[in-house]
Amino acid sequence: MAGYPETVEDEESMYSGKKPQPSATTPIMAEVVQNEGGIQKKKSLTLREILGLEDLFSLTVNTVISIKLSVFVYVYIMSYAFKAKRLPCKMFLCTQTWRASVAELLGTAVLVFALDTIVISTIQTQTTTPNLILSTLVAIIVTILLLATYPISGGHINPIVTFAALLTGLISISKAFIYILAQCVGGIVGALALKAVVNSEIEQAFSLGGCTLTVVAPGPDGPTVVGLETGQALWLEIICGFVFLFASVWMAFDHRQAKGLGRVNVLIIVGIVLGLLVYVSTTVTATKGYAGAGLNPARCLGPAIVRGGHLWNGHWVFWVGPAIACVAFAIYTKVIPSQLPHTME
Image (cartoon, rainbow, N blue to C red; front, top):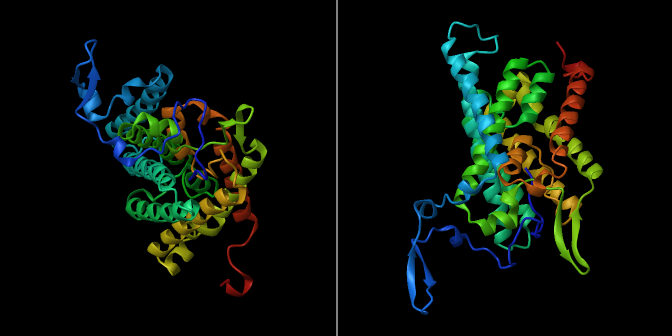
């Protein structure tokens, strides 16, 4: 759930420095061109340009291959699972699990689209407190999506939650794999949807709202790399990831707490904690070029595949950090008793 504290120009950007307006994404039906005689006339746009899909057809070959491969693997296995309806649900090709994974895919796609849109629009407003507004909106959208997906799939929409559930013994390896695969595909779909509705200037200026450690910004002596060191970013991912699991997700994992607090209250707490962590990670560092803790590898993967470029710099941090946090959380749940002695029956 990364957010941009400041807007800087990256090495792929040809952005001129003017503030992009939201209305710039509205497709125009024709543009004025000038011929050799100096007479102006309207040039008809293609169907791709009218629908705003021109950028989608300009994806690199490697990006297209990655997207096709991810979608193919997910759809192929899911279709095979639906044919094997007699298989028990404990096995890999369980129809019920794959149906739930569709909710994870759609939920993650909407999450990535909404969060990246929030990142871009928050910076465009040029408010004095972008981090506060960003974290508040993140908490709201995450809570809404958790409420929407929880009855169907358990409301993971985040590989961190799924991996933690696996390590704590709440779900099987096969279910965790299916969920994480669906979440990654959903992240790509969400990033593609955002790419389709914004113009190239906004895409380049904000890198589709993706997760970044460093960017190339203009300096007094020429372009210079600004951002956060890899080691610092890794520790921030580990700490924020563990706090996220410890302070909120464990309430959903623990049936006694979930029953006592109520499902809706637990999901609201998860959203609030995530919003607070976004605010802390973007405020404490206050480093130009660093987008804050990702806290969702699938949310970072989508823009990285669709946009590419500098979004791949240190991308492993947004996977390794949360993975270490999940392992630490799993150890904590095994070592620390879930109840105080005076509350145990």
